[in-house]
Length: 126
Image 1 (spheres, helix red, strand yellow):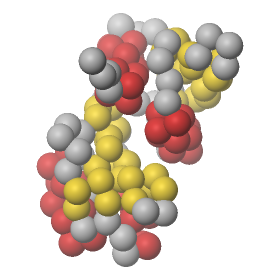
Image 2 (cartoon, rainbow, N blue to C red; image 1 turned 90 degrees about the horizontal axis):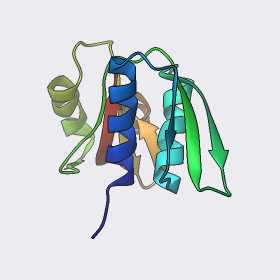
Image 3 (cartoon, rainbow, N blue to C red; image 1 turned 60 degrees about the vertical axis):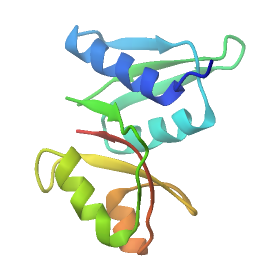
């Protein structure tokens, strides 16, 4: 039985924000989740995160975030389709960020448009 670590962690972040918690601890981590947290920190969705390698967990301090979710199923899209999915998942034109897994690593949808590369949709937040 496999678990989606990214979807579980983003769901925990969203539930913690709804219940007005300051920070949470995610018990299962992966390299993909750490990269997503880096992007979320750059966009001020979370304030900080601290990895505990002994317990294999990460403690996340929440920032300015309203909603965050994993995109299921993980659609693949080329550059011309990024705008279509942005309209589907994000509330307004300049609000929110989609995370795309490309052959150059994880990047936001703005960076993917600048690079001219498509990829696999992983998550979104705003």
